[in-house]
Image (cartoon, rainbow, N blue to C red; front, top):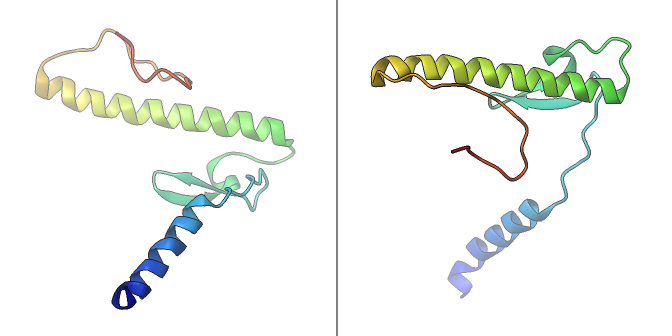
Length: 102
């Protein structure tokens, strides 16, 4: 037990860090948001001048959806050529419980 004490303390610290409640998002110029694995200030992703928090949230959501759709369409184009198949439709929608559609 003594020889593994440091490892145990390190792992319990990691667990405590993972359980922390995430900070509330700041929808201001200084607020940081993830995009493609990197952090960006809000004003680097969308136009922020003169918009209230509700409109900033809506515009950020539109930005993420349009970016997602663009990336998905590019990837689908690559794979449809390789696999010689073409999807009937491509949709990016918000869903909390559904991951796919049959």
